[in-house]
Length: 95
Image (cartoon, rainbow, N blue to C red):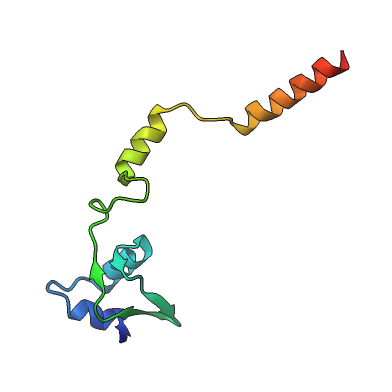
């Protein structure tokens, strides 16, 4: 059974401002995800708010772990490197 986001919020142990609840929807914190219906969202009556910091993604890493790993590793095959490599090969073949 689907109810509006406002009704769902009122049933929560600690109701929040409706704008905060909409931010949760956009951030994917409510599961199962509500669906837009005109000007409002419809959500399953048994939907829950999840803690995104405790949820592991399919890689087994949290978002912060992914950000740290992305910052510490070298970028692989940038487009500029690929293009310059192709140009270098063309120049070598022309010589």
